[in-house]
Image 1 (tube, rainbow over the protein chains, first blue to last red):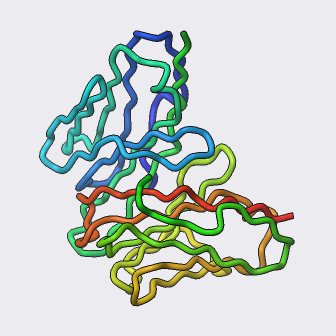
Image 2: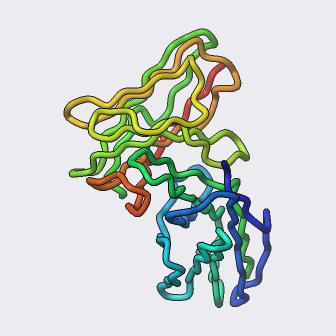
Image 3: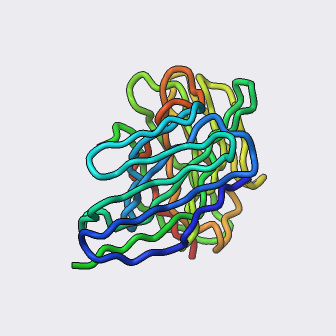
Length: 113
Length: 115
């Protein structure tokens, strides 16, 4: 089942912060975050595994609450290069080796000067 | 460059035709995934292969089929094409175990236009 992302779109001025949320109705093993520029391949940002860890690099970080089956992506002091569509992908904890990564519909982030 | 190679990059074909999209995963990756992305749509999971075997299936139409060969490259076959099949098709690969914790790297995609 497809995870739900919110908001669907957000517009920022350079230097502002944003939070993108991702929630699932199923038990999750992992959450993957990607950024995609129009017409290009999604680019991997980070992966969070079951255990509630928080990860980050530079001004982009993320958290994963496995009990609530939710993840949030935090972008601080946004830069023009942050513009794009952000996708969360959820890996379900099926307990077997069969596995699929299901993506949300994406959040369009626009950073203006 | 993710290391995942897809061909062709662009393809225009007529309705009713059949096409094959090809994907070479990153060196050492055993898992291959196929995704479809239509205009203004998210990434729709089609199918996953691991070391030649089908491992997970998404909303893949019966007109579509895929396989992974012994050299680990994969092909996605689309037949009886319809206008609605026009989309960007991505192949992605991940590491040896093909488990949810592995990072998945995407290729540049194959643009399919059905006219």
